Amino acid sequence: MNWKRVLIIGALAALPAAAWSQANILNAKKPEDIGKRTEAQITADNDKPLEYGYVDDRDILWSKTIWEVIDLDERVNFPMYYPIDTIDIGSDRRSLYDVLLKNIKSGKLTDVYVDSYFTEKRKFSDLEATLKKVDTTDLGYEQMNAGEEISPEYINRRDLTAADIEEYRVKGIWYFDKRQGELKYRLLGIAPVAPDVNFIDDESMSPEDALVELFWVWYPSARQMLHDSKVFNQRNSSQPLSFDMLLNARRFNAVIYKEENVHGDREIKDYIAENALFQLLESERIKEQIRNREQDMWAY
Image (cartoon, rainbow, N blue to C red; front, side, top):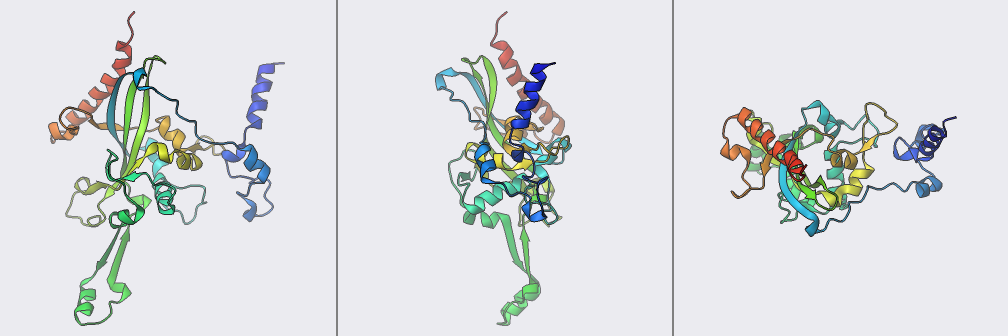
C-alpha cells in the first residue's frame, strides 16, 4: 500500500472545507441553514492570509516600482469583474469592486487614498461625489423657478456599480532579495478605474478619455478583507480562491503603463504618443528588463 498517498489524502480531508465552499451546505436541513457554521467549525478554521516575511532594506540588492493596468475585458481577468448583478446570486460571491466598496462604507478599510503615492487619505464621504451623480432635468428646473417642489421623476440619479468598472490599476515593486537569492514581487496598491460619473452617459466623449481612478487602496491593509472574499473557481467550485491569493499569485494579465523614472515617473504614453503598438512594445521591453535582472545577478 502506498502510505504516502494515504497520508496526503488524510491531510486534505482534515483541512477546513468550510473555508472553500458554502459552509454546512450538505448538512443543511433547510436553506436558512446554509452558511451557518458551528462554534467548533469557527474555532478549528484558523484561516488567514499568509503573512509577508520581513525584508530588511540591506537585503534589497535591486528594486523597481511599476504601475500596471488590468483590463477587465480579458477573459483571464473576469474573476475580478463578475458578478455584476447581485440580485439573484448568493452573498458569498461578489466582485472585487463590491468587496472594496463594502469595506470602505463600513469603515473596516480606512487606508484609502487619492493617488498611488498614498499621501492624501480619503473617507467614504469624500468619495461619494465621484461615485454618484444627481442631476435635475429641464422640467425640474422649471418647477424650481416657479417656486414649486421638484418632483422625484425629474431628478436623475446615477451610481457607479461593478458593471461600470473598466479596469484596475495596480502598483507594485519588483526587488531582488540577496538573502533569498531570487527576484520577488510585492503588491502595494490597487485602484478601480471607471468612466467619470459626470460624463458616463455622454456619447460625445471617447470612453478612454473619460476614465478616472476612483480611489487607491493601500493593499497590505486590505489583505484580510480580500482573503475573506472568495473568487469563483471554474475548475472546482468547492475550492474557490480568495482575492488576496489571486492578486499575490499574479493570476491575472496586466500591461505596464508606467515605471519609476527620473522624468517624474512619466507614463509610457507621455513619451510614445498616439501609437498603441509601440506603447505595448515598450511595456514588454520594461517587463523583459525586469526578468533579465535576475539572470544578470548570477555568474556561471
